[in-house]
Amino acid sequence: MKIDEQLFEKALYAYQNAYTPYSHFNVGAVLLMKDGTIITGSNIENASYGLSNCAERSALFSAYSQGYRKDDIERMMVIGNSRGPISPCGACRQVMSELIPLDVEVVLTNLKKDLKIMKVKDLLPYSFTDGDLHGKGI
Image (cartoon, rainbow, N blue to C red; front, side):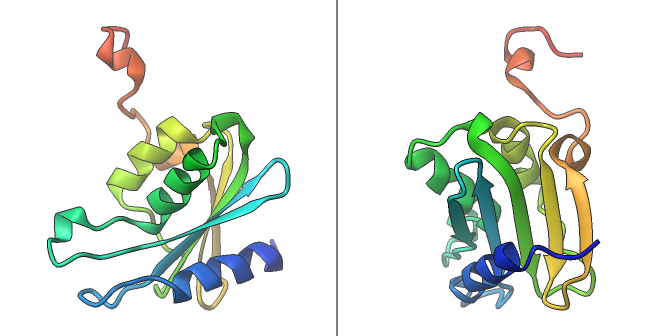
């Protein structure tokens, strides 16, 4: 499968804008919205590591802050300087499972354009959902 060059360039832009003075590990993410808008997110670190934010969540929080919602999201791409396609952390997988439709494709890549495409539902099987809050979980 060939990479979507427009999304890759926007993800690379987000990657280059990351603020990573501690880990020096940049990550960029983009959301393609159904109306054609592309929303970027970068990882932003803080000396108090727990207050840092990943690129995936930065993009999602930006989209929701702009008024977009779950059903507006068509695709996501995440890029990092990893040996193979980057993998979202567990926290991002949990947030993605709630804020993105479960059948949306997430394109995982790296600076060499290696690809792995997964659906949100496959990134975090057995995720914690609002149903669990109301005793309706498994």
